[in-house]
Length: 159
Image 1: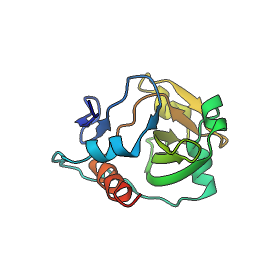
Image 2: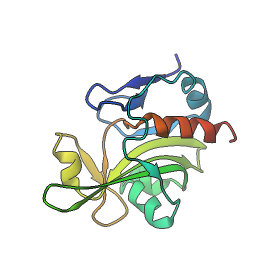
Image 3: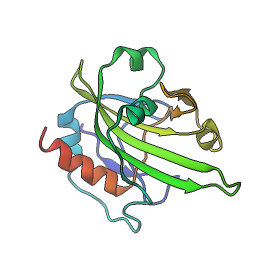
Image 4: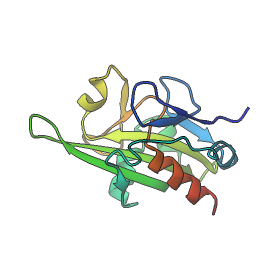
């Protein structure tokens, strides 16, 4: 059965694509995404503050886990989105949502990264370090606004 886009129960106006709780979503085929990203639900907050982000080496290093799988891959960004906010204490909070292609396997990884582990840990989620100093990656399936999923659908239609 092909995974489909489903509403996230803990994040209003965000959705997830298949996956299991507590793990980074590695090894998704482009065909699985094409088949699963067809019926888009309605969303009151389409972008949720996210915008397209540069496919820079700096952003890519923020999205690659400092793990055996992360180090073994040859990664290329398919889509990166960024959201910046200011916390109550005045500190910047930055979130990246991405679809990365592992050039070694041709498969997609869906991933969330942020500039401090407190951003992820405050919700009781686990994290791993990224290849960029002071950035961490959530060890869970990625929730993203509809904007991310529709843009990803557009991009994989040309791959």
